[in-house]
Structure formats: structure tokens, C-alpha cells
Image (cartoon, rainbow, N blue to C red):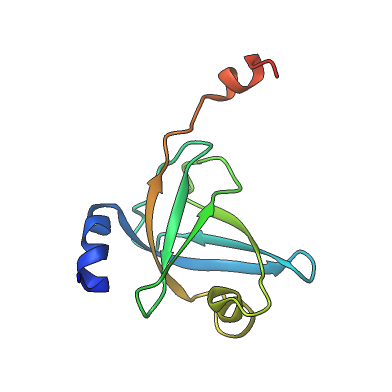
Length: 122
């Protein structure tokens, strides 16, 4: 059985260490987390893609970006907190501005341009 390290090796080429800029509780069940690369190596992404946050024990949590990509490299996530969630607990108690998170991505190919979205008819 492959180790967590082996399983994560496929992520290495899409690895970023992001610094938490700010954390805001939007209500009692949602946190807005804004992060940026301190190495000035931003992750470029398109609407519809997601990223993975790797926890210290190798577990991974996936989240969609809540903002459009911009040259400032800031990535915003809106994260629903779960009562006994591992990452939710870290957000409540440990993760603060200045914290560093291991992030992999972007992933997903369900993307489109803003123009395509406006032209779509549902």
C-alpha cells in the first residue's frame, strides 16, 4: 500500500506554500480565508477549478476558489465549518494571518471564460 508521501508525489509539480493574509468568520458556519504566495509565485487558475490543502498528517481537503484570478496572487476561499471537521477545527483554533499552508493545484477542467458564462443559456 503506498504511503501518504507516495500518494502526494503526483502533486509536487503543482505545489505552493501559501501564507494566510486574513481569516474572517462570515457567520458561525463559514470562514473566508485569503492567502498569497510569499515567494511571489502565484497559482494561476480559471473559474471552476479547485485546489487541495494538504494537512500536516498528509490528509487533503479540496476547495473551490471564491475569487477570480488576478495578478496580485491572492486566493480567496469560503469554507463551510463542520462540527467535528479536522480542517474546520484548525481554522477555529490554529490558523491565523501569517500561517503557512501547503496547497496543490489548480485542478479541474470544468472551466470557461467570463464571456462564455454570459453567453450560456440555461
